[in-house]
Amino acid sequence: MEAKNKQEQRNKALRLLSVDARISMQELANKLGTTKANAYGVFNEVLSEYGMHFVPEISIDKLWKWEFIKKARLRTKRGIIAEAEEEMPLTGFSEYIIRIKFFGKHPSDEEITKAIGDSYVPQFAARTTGECDLLIYAVARSYEDAIMFTGTVNRSLGKYDMLAYTDRAWSCFGFFPMSNKLIEQFDIFDTYKNLLFGLNGTGRNTFTEIGKKFNQGPAQMLYAYDRLAKTEILKRVTYFESKPKATINAAAIIRVRNINDYERELNAWYMKIVKEYENNENECVYMCDVSNPKGMVVLGGFRSKERANKFFSAIRSSMKGIEVSRIDLSKVIMGNMGTRDFDMRYTSQYKCLERKKLVPSMRERAQEIPVENPDNF
Image 1 (cartoon, helix red, strand yellow):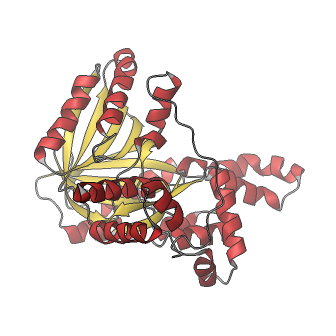
Image 2: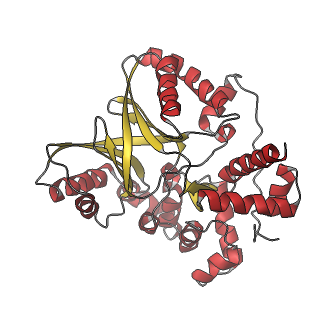
Image 3: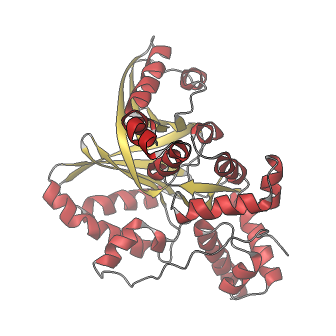
């Protein structure tokens, strides 16, 4: 019984850290129903076992807000209006899924790494098997930038025959950890950018520690955190696992054949995964909508072939009007997947079901001022 209770505490700690990785040790203890000392022990156990890295999760599609505010701050109203047409197209970022299929001989890992180069655009790249051989998650300021990046990869691997597809993506679940190269491209106030740098990989550091790196005080870091959180650009500080238990990573490429059937049955699949992960480990890593053709890309991490097969079967059986193909990730070339045991109640999928009264209503907790030192013991 004691071992079972210990495992339940570890599982609950993972869920709590997934939605608020800066949770204080006292609050963690309260939610686990245990002492502060025991909570600290549970925290250190999961930290070591899963190789947890604490990072910011941001809304890529909302970055334009602070980029535009920065551009507007030093301009008069007349200047803003006069330059809006020129400035607005250069504000913000978008997400892309790039799929590459090679014919004949394939390039080596070293050649792919060299082709990707020093660009800020790619955040994750992996070799795959199935209908494509290379999958890249990318973030770019414009579709032209994304296409230019894909073209650069093509030219660098010019001795190989390939087809490359660059699809606009709209994330609806999960995340990929950002690179510092991408953060550097954000045209936001320096204090906000420095906060994101400081949280990236060391998200439980004190605001004093983060501020010291950039010759700024903790109050400035705290203010930046509060502003980014309240404008929903900073969704949360979360974690990804560098030592995940999943041994099989695979993606479902969903293409819509009948839009009416697809939209009518989509909630059935949402309901199925919400119920599945109420008590079981969350296997979903990332989902996004794509438009060419309309559909979704869904990435998951699984502990066994049986679990992976069950996941794909659930997609096919829950939704009509679609075709589903599977690609398996065989080797990560760059970046990390956002693997974590996320609490489904905090997802847009749950909110969708909640609006239709298909799941119990959940009250989002009020925005709290983050503590200076979450590890205070």
